[in-house]
Length: 294
Image 1: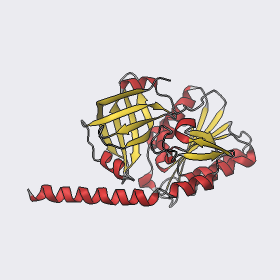
Image 2: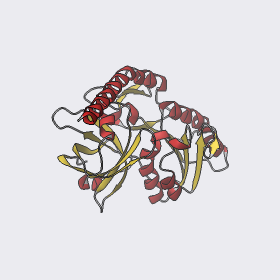
Image 3: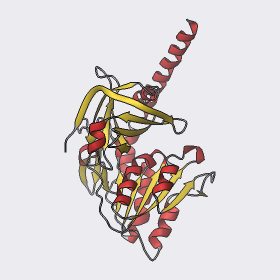
Image 4: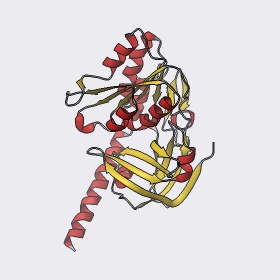
C-alpha cells in the first residue's frame, strides 16, 4: 500500500457544519483520493512544526476531481482548532491512506448500522457494498433529529433505510438494535452486519447479532490517537489477543472485542480532553475580545 504525505498542499475546498460540533471538510488530496479504499483513514496535522497528528476516517472521495471528505467532531484542542478553518485555508499536512480497508465482496444482504458521527465513516462502506452488488440495509441512529448526518447520502444508496432517534424527533423512537434484531430474526437474515458508532452502540449491536451467528464487523477508530502504532493508546483486546487499532484495524470482529476493557481505557483520556478543550475555548474567547478592542 502506497502512503502519500505532503506539506501545505491540502486546500479546504468546502466547509459545512452538520450539527452543533460536527463539521464536514472537502479537502484537495488527489493522490489519496485515487488510492483510498472504504474503511481507511488519514492523519491530519494543522501545524507542521508542533501540531498534533489527528486520525480522521475518510467519509467520501472523488478520484477524478481529486478530493477527500473528512467529518469530525470538535471534542479536543486540535479538532476545535480544525473546526475554525474555513474554505480556502490549507492544512499543514495530510498522510494517508492508512489502516486496513474494509473487506468487500458480493455476499447478498449487508446491514450497515451507524450511530451519531459514525454514520460518516460508514458512508464509503455502504458505497463499496452497493458497487459489489450487495443489497444494503442502512440503520441510522442519533439522540435527536439535529444530530442526524448524511441522511440524504444514505437514502440515495440504501435499498432500505431505518432512522432511529432517542426522542422520536425523526424516524422511529428507539434504538438501532431494535430493527437490527428484527432483520436478524427474519426468514432472510443478513450475510454480514457492519456497525460504526459509539462503543456502547457497537457492543450491543454485536450482542444482538451473536445469537443469530451473523458475522459482525465493527470499526474501533474512536480510540485511535497517533494513528501509527507508536503510542499504544489504541491497544485493544480481540479474542484475548492484544491488537492495535491503527495498524491491525481499524475494523475487527465485533463478537471478539473486549468492549468493557476498551470503554474503560477510553475514559482515561476524558479529563485531558476536557482540560484541553476548555483551555482552547478560553484562548479563542480572549482572542475575540482582543480583536474587538482594536
